[in-house]
Length: 307
Image 1 (tube, rainbow, N blue to C red):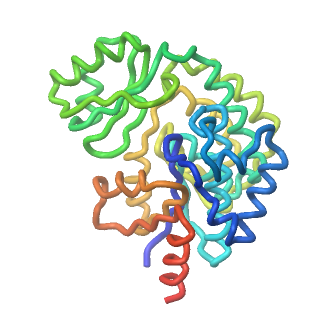
Image 2 (cartoon, rainbow, N blue to C red):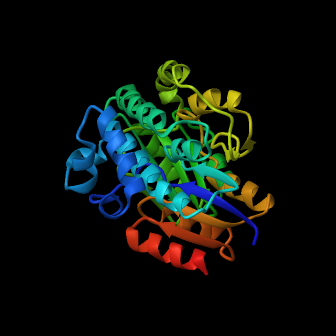
């Protein structure tokens, strides 16, 4: 067997009821949720386990999703499964850092609570957004929008799926240029702002102050950073990478290829949904991806691991 990576989804993976089965069945998960509920200033358990429209509001989504991912991780690691490396898609990078031992779970949850607020405040709703571009390479997308000052690439997700971000009027123009360049579809995403664009630099600088207050620990396992798709083994680099990440492109496909080049052949996607598994089918379909997004998924992993 090769190496194992724990990978975490980003904003958009959240869904009503997420983690409820872990809270009911797993004592390790329950401890994480109860800890997060005790330090947050909103009803976390209600947002995660019941229908609550706030779950899709950035300032609440981020803490709810990271808490859920870490609760699920607590049960996975209790089986004796440890990662050789971790990574997370945008917001998921905070769960990856906690899983790698660089951050206490409570600090990861509090950091993304602040991150969500800063990002929500950065650009008034409706003045910017993001669109998924299907059918073009990252390089083709870059070339198509090269003349636009208000639109950049937000995410390099996988072959044939790139996300662009920027001002609302710029995205309309970008859509025309991308279709002319041969895109199959350009789909506006249901997000409240132009995340991972230069418009978020102010939010990144505010986040720096929060991160300065958080103690970072030597990494038990390396993680791969979104902004440069490189292995990080020195905790002194983490703050700057997280500050840059808010306004920089997420190099997810490149991150996965870096892991594969370093011997990773098993990916455990921890969190609701199967976003990352979908990307991996296009990046390296021959590799194994385990999803742990429900208690049933966890039981299947437990049974397989025992064998």
